[in-house]
Image 1: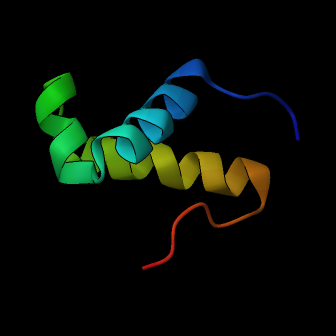
Image 2 (image 1 turned 90 degrees about the horizontal axis):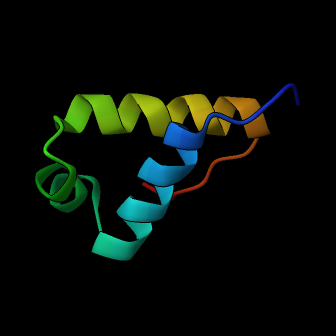
Length: 53
């Protein structure tokens, strides 16, 4: 693992706290694809899935 991006962690934590990508996107005033992409990048960086679909 090289490094972790603060935004990746922030979006992940917000998604867990708010209970979903759609809810945190409203809270953070960002689009759902932006949040989802950042979480996918974090998952790739960690080598683990963080959420079950």
